Each structure stands twice: as structure tokens, then as C-alpha cells.
Amino acid sequence: MSPQELAKQIFKEKFNRTSTLNVYAPGRVNIIGEHTDYNDGFVMPCAINYGTAISGAKRDDSIFKVYASDLKQFDEFSLAEEITVNPKEKWTGYVRGVVKFIQESCPDFKQGADLVISGNVPLSAGLSSSASLEVAIGKFCQQLANLPISNTEIALVGQKAENQFVGCQCGNMDQLISALGQKDHLLMIDCRSLDTIPTPVPHNIAVMIVNSHVKHDLVAGEYNERRQQCEIAAKFFGVKALRDVSIETFKQRENELIALDEKVAKRARHVITENQRVLEAVEALKQGDITRLGKLMGESHDSMRDDFEITVPQIDYLVELAQLVIGNKGGARMTGGGFGGCIVALAPLDKVEAVRQIISENYEKQTGLKEDFYVCTASQGVVVC
Image 1 (spheres, rainbow, N blue to C red):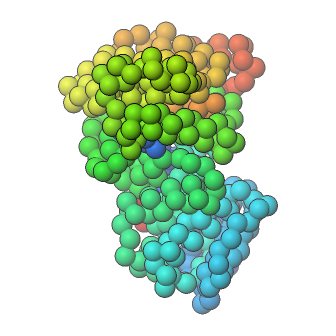
Image 2 (tube, rainbow, N blue to C red):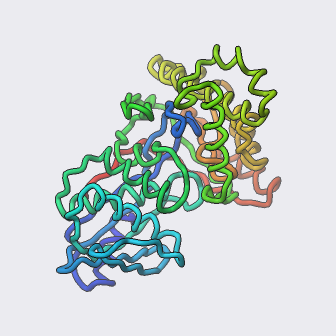
């Protein structure tokens, strides 16, 4: 059963009435452009056909009563009082944070609701289950009280909730693609201007995602540390963000930065070269040059492994296996924040079974972990359904 159907069904069971408002927001996979978003750079994700559904209905008071069906847990808070963190359950922070910051821009928003959340984005896999939840909650609030906020603003509220309420200093990519995704397209996003360039996925190309089952939790320091290192590098170059540093400028001053802090230099090198790779990937896709795109994905993975140091051996092994089959007909790389999670691979449809097979025959034997394999389609962003 789809999350949308499940949310409606469970709402009826838990609240003994029929939902009147149903929204759905997708998760995402990032094809190229990792850790560039919070550096005001470029990313190229697509929304995927896994996401978060919310079914609900108005109450006649200011209470939000929320049931997370996957976790079988309730949370309840009032929109008439200051919204604070519930220290017992992490998931409630994403809901409460979004509602709190929507109230900040729409102070009259006090409409209570009963709602059920149901999702099928694999948790802790780097496919943005949290952003999908934030955007779904934002859209639900907008529709519930007919609030004058756009999908882009909903995405930025979601990012703010994650930064300031949950405590993960993520960029804006995950929320933006969940809010703005286009069916059958990758979306190049300029994370500074928020301009987007939709780029069609070539019709015979599959988007494969393989979950390594090495769990990651980005709030636990490593992500925030990388962000601080990027800020130190930007300060060194005297710019607002690493987006403003060209590869030529970096090379001219690279040794100076290495002498100051070798790790910071490596982080900067990744971000600056990754931004360039995203721009080149857009051109490659426009020309239907899947070989060039695959090469850029490979370079991106090497950079994440060697310069940004966010891959783990299991992820490197999955990329290696996928690449053996794909050859020069596509590419594979780690996707998401790092330290576990998933790889993404693009290849012709006729390569999918061979990629699935080589991974299922070798990965568990080598690592003791069993992968999950998904073939995804590029999907529409948040919708009322």
C-alpha cells in the first residue's frame, strides 16, 4: 500500500473520521553536487518515487495532534503557546520546527489539526526522509490555513527547522528538490539565487539507488564540522562562500592554505571542483553524453573519498562493483551527507539487472551487510493529493 493510502486509512482508524486534507512530498537522490549547497553552490538532484504522506483534518482548537504511523508514536502541542523541543523523540523536532517557523512568517496561524504521517523513504539512508517530512508538514500547514507562502518558502522553512530546531546545519538542497522537483527531470539548483534548470533524464537511463545499510546520523558532529571547515576556507579567500572561488584562484593559493590547515584545504578543493563538475554535468546531459556524466560522477566520488573524507569502505566497494558493470555507459558515486547511506548509479536500462546481480553476489559476502536496491524515477515535488 502506498504511503498516501496508508495515511488516509490510519487517520480513519486513529481519529475516527475521514481526512479532508492529504499532501505528499518526495524524498530525493542527488546525482552530483555534494556538500556544495551550504557553500552557496550548485547541485543536481531529482525527486524520487519514495516520500512522506500526511492525511489530516482541522480541529476546532489550536492543538496539533500528530501520529507517526511508522513509529507508532503520538505527539501533541499547541499553536497558541510557544512551540518548544520535545527532547524524548527526535522526529517531533521536524514537525514542531516547521510549524514554529511558519508561525514566524504567518503569526496568525493558530489553526489546530489532527494528522497522520506515513512514509516509505528509507530512514538514515541519505535520501532525505527528514526534508520530505518537513516539506509535507509545511504544505499541510499552508493548505490547512490558506497561508500566503510559496513552495520555495516552504522549503526554506524546512531548512530553517533543521538548522535551528533540530541542530543539523544542512544546506537547502534537500528541501528545495522535495518542494520543486519535476517529473522525469533532474533539477540543477543554484543554492544562492534559488534559480533552477530542469534537465531531462535521458529516456533509456535508469536511476539506481543502493542502500549500504551503514547508518548515518548527520546531527552527530561530522557534518557540522565540515561546514565549519568550509567557512574557514571562505574566510581565507576573503569571500562570502566557496562558491565565489574559481579553480584558478584556488590553485594559486592552495599551498598557502595547506600550510595553514591541510584539512581545510582539502575540504575547499572538493567544494570548488564539485561546483565545476555540476555545471559540466548539465552540459553533458543537454548533449545526451552519458559517458561524460559518468566520468564526472566518478571524479565526484573520488573527491568525496579523498578530499572531503565522507565515504566509508562499504560505500566505496558498492561504487566499485557498480562501475565494473556500467563501464563508460554511465556512472556511480556516493550520494547524500556521507558516513554511510547510499550510492546512486546512472546507466542504461539494460544494465540494471547486471548491476543488481554483481552487488547481491558480492556485497554481503564482503561486508556482512545486506543491501537494498531501488530503481527510481524522477518525480514531481510536493503535491496535494
